[in-house]
Image 1 (spheres, one colour):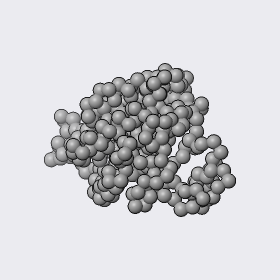
Image 2 (image 1 turned 90 degrees about the vertical axis):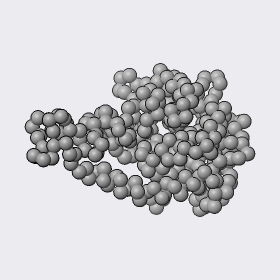
Image 3 (image 1 turned 180 degrees about the horizontal axis):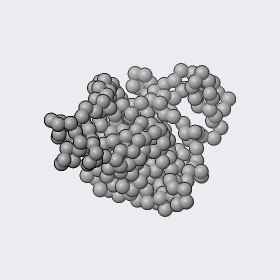
Image 4 (image 1 turned 180 degrees about the vertical axis):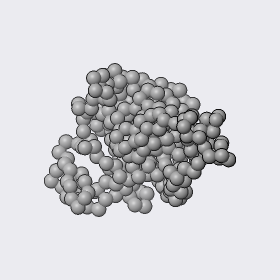
Length: 324
């Protein structure tokens, strides 16, 4: 079971939901090439205006071409395009979806019926908008590392950077995705553009292994030293999606090409032609050597062997505990 990153999962989910797209999920697999090239919504989200049938992956898998509605862990294929009113498209004869046996009542031709699901989603969006604003505001104010670029690895409750300082691929990639999506859907400001460019540069310069083009798992705070050199497809999927989104939003073809190149490499070596999907059986885990998990009171805690637990603290890669 992959480690759940509660804090940033919630942050990304809220930001993506209110911005009109869904976040990259916690247990996703590698996105398909068409999704990478277009920078579409991950986790099976239904993009505005997209009506082609698609599928949502389990646990937040990015999907190939959008058009599927569904939350974390499940998805419902959508086969009919939506009209501007949110209902199924009307044919010229006034039928729903072109079905000759479903004529509308007289006087209703050309008027889409109410869509309770879209009304509910609109209400939820309005409720979550203030939370998204506060969440983005917090990370924009306290997250960027002014000394070494990238985002701080760990913050306390007041937003002050604290140890551990090493920066992980999943964390830094998700920040790049957030910056790009927020710029695209909410605030197209020069400040966000510059911050996203800095985040992209840090990701590219610090995490890409020149020997094989793959992404390493973790680097030092300044990005000059590799702390964990393992190549994990789960983590690299975040980088691929973030780069694809950044490339689409800002027209940066080099970011898109990097995402496509890494996907092509993974697709060639890990695609399961017999069963579909990608073979992750050889993927290294998340926990460093000597660490263990502890299930207690409905919580899944990460503990270094032989060490105790104290109050959690805010991290860019989840709400993590400190060690005594």
